[in-house]
Length: 136
Image (cartoon, rainbow, N blue to C red):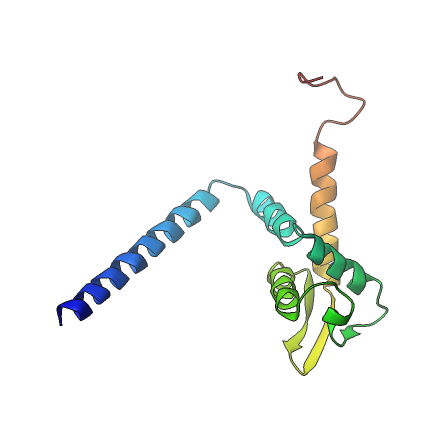
């Protein structure tokens, strides 16, 4: 009985700690603009070479990709699935991800939005023709 109560108490404490961390994260996100949050989300989704390879492979397709990406990538199926989910969560790809029905493609609307956001971001940064930084 005591052991069960201790387990429940421990579970409640862990749940509370996780909720507290999540709330702190949400409050922190409120400190950033929507543009900054969008750029960070897309950058995170593109932050792994396997995801870049997936995007490049999908970009080369004239239609949605049907089949198993593991045949075209040097990583395990479980890793491909995780990377596809990260890209899908960021809105960069779309499709059906429930085997045996699988089809993937670039989400053109979101892709163009990502290009616009990053284009503006890099354009806003000091360029080569501007004064040298203090670190030169």
